[in-house]
Amino acid sequence: MEKFDAVVVGAGPAGSTSAFVMAKAGLKVLLLERSKAAGEKNVFGGRIYSHVLKRLFSNFEDEAPVERYVVRETIGMMDDSDCVSLDFVSRRDTPRSACSFVARRNRFDKWLSEKAEQAGALFVGGTKVDDLIIRDGKVCGIVSGSDTIEADCVVDAEGVTAALSRRAGLRNDVAPSQIKVGVKETIQLSRQSINERFSLSDDEGAACVYIGQPTSFLTASGAFVYTNSESISIGVVVDPLELSQARIEVQEMIEKFRLHPSMERLLSGGKVIEYSAHMIPNSVPALPSNLIRDGFLSTGDAAGFFINHGFTYRGVDLAMASGEAAGNAVVEAHSLGSYGREELMRYYSGLSSTVLPEMEHAEKTGEVLHNERIFSTYPSIAIGFMEDMFRINGFDREGAASLLKKNMSGRVSTLRMLRDAYSAYRRM
Image (spheres, helix red, strand yellow):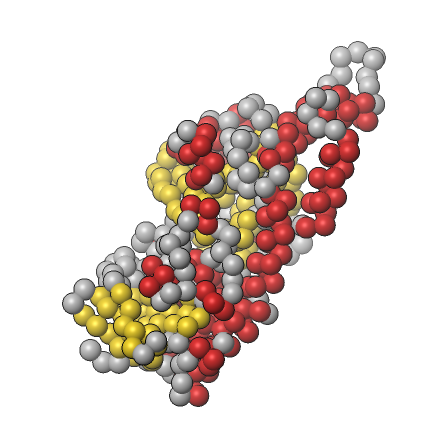
């Protein structure tokens, strides 16, 4: 087969963005995807932050398959029957000016891969990459079945398993502690029902995250709800090790979330049309030693780029930003006529002004999210306190301080709560 300047493995957001940047610069790029079409097997909750898209495609809103623009944000705390939530609605500008939107990955990824093709990349679906070609310590291409494809550089954007990054010696086998599992159901509802139940107009969308039940016995876990055009995505993100130790199936958790009284009202009359699960990267340090080697770069989920702040989940914009940085690094290496590790270090420089500061901040946030009281004790206290605040049973009402102290009693001391609050303030 002919030799390529670059082979990109995986046509998700990271891979297609990388291929687009390189092809637009005139490089001969091959974009490979294991599924027949980009996005065919990709799963995620549905929210995409648009800052990278706005930089790459000035009119992306006119082309991208946007379901709804997020104007409503909800952070909720649940127990078995009740919910306390903080709701923010932004209608300062038009929905299209919102910083994020909801999309379906099978449509969005296909659109993005087509943008790479339009820029000049060659897309080939239904292709499994089995190995790397390595000569004298440099990656020189890939092996797919009986075919070998030569390339000056290979970009690994295949996903969280990072098989090629492991073959390149940049990663060890993925440990259970390095992944989380996201499970999602898509529930069909009419556009009118969604608009009425979430107080939205046709282009407006909602993004909701919840802690407490059904994941109250886990740490750094939670549930989410996103509104599509004519369906709702609900799901949970959990630690598989903690789930295994508790001997609970993840299907039980998403069912418990769907049947919660607060959710039942929103989902009433809906029909489950899709069920899917996806591994999410967690706790993979972003260092040159696990991102770059001669003729090879690791991006997106394969590089471990995912953020859980507790109040939002981010992955797609990090994947696209890393794909853009990888593409720019390969373009520069091409102009220098060398694809060694030193020449490809521009990739890490590009990440240092985009993805890496976010990852470093998220690492501090992660320390807060491993406090089990955030997911079990404090939601219960908040719900009990709010219930007591609004309940009037005569003329012996207690003050707010007394009600809070009553709900804290036997659960957490005032000093401990203040320490937790200060710790969260320092790291968030």
